[in-house]
Length: 242
Image (cartoon, rainbow, N blue to C red; front, side, top):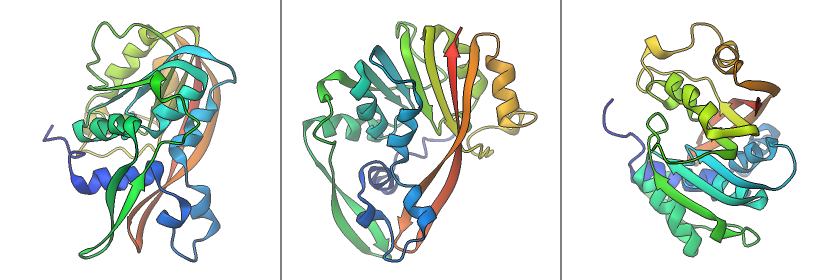
């Protein structure tokens, strides 16, 4: 693999806006309903777990941390891990207060915005570290919940993570996997892509250790400039560790 493509100021700003931006900071003035429904993706994916409090939660591919902070609503301890050093630095810095960044509008035009963690979240329950989801440290322990949103199809060999997942979840624990299934050779070599559909592949890989509880879709929207947006639909699956 080449150098980490997520280590850039442009992408850091895009993801801070994606995770923490307000509707009027992201959307054009006359936004169609589909764009509005795609906001707050990093919050919506965390709500697919069953209700109730748990002790430990792992957020893999946490980016700049909004989902990690959201998971602290129902977890005494949450660990967020991402491959990008700059993303993790920003996520951790937000525990200390708001973080300024520049939204790209057009050409050389920029707007300074402020990312902020919602005040009602137990920030002290959250920690972050840089790591590779396919080479996680051996002493992570196990968790009651594992959340991995839009991660699988950005890994060099995602099957390695799937094989590690049973050891990360306690019996009865829940796993939320969200993926837009946008398999690209620049991230994952074609020989490591699913042979058939991504859902069939997940069922084949996980069925021995997990029960599939739900399959649904969640749209998401990434603003690149004032006139360019990425609208994508992510497949969200909920699993329970046998």
